[in-house]
Length: 98
Image 1 (cartoon, rainbow, N blue to C red):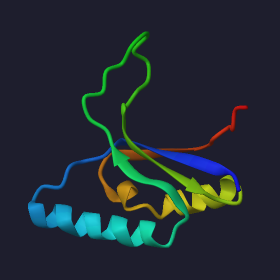
Image 2: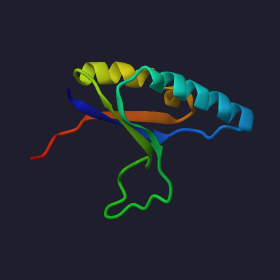
Image 3: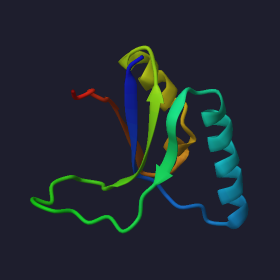
């Protein structure tokens, strides 16, 4: 089955611990029914090398199994990450090398 990487860009931080817990609960519910290879992995200490034309840096990623890009996109569209202000997500099929 093809694998897809969802990359998370931007997004606002929760304003309270309670908001953060509620948001994480929605993530856990969303991920619970998916065929995840790697669940949500936040990133920190990001450094950009080369021409700084990447726009909003990647904040994290997930890798999942899906039948095709359309199914992966449908899954991504339901992510609680997209509920945050200034959040965007990229969906890409992984190419198996070798």
